[in-house]
Length: 164
Image (cartoon, rainbow, N blue to C red; front, top):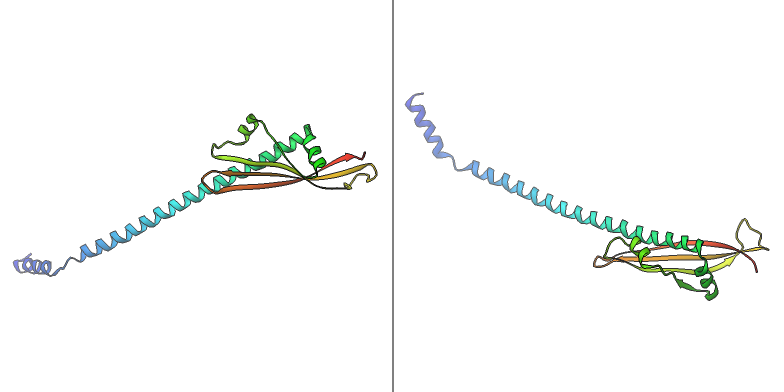
């Protein structure tokens, strides 16, 4: 390399105006925006996942309460008889140990478990002369404190009884 070439190289260095710095800053800005957007998306997905989990938990609790009530009615139909006699709604009470098994989250509250007599009629597949069907709705409601999450489930049942 001759002296003139070295002088020409030094003159080119003097003409550069920091283009590499400007390009590096633009690339850094783009990477920062990508990172911030990814963080926001991650937070949103975490919130949606938590809401979905609460929804499943509260649905399962209300459904389990209805299932428990149906088992109770098959063992002891006195609550159904009370609903028929009053022609209305009866609250279904459960002991603390049962409620503790159903309600797994300390913020979850099972607010309603009731049975309502909705009517009677001739059950299909039975003699209308000898049997009558009583129709009931079993309602269960629960909520999770501080979240606004709630669930209300209703199950219809029919109990066939001999006519008096």
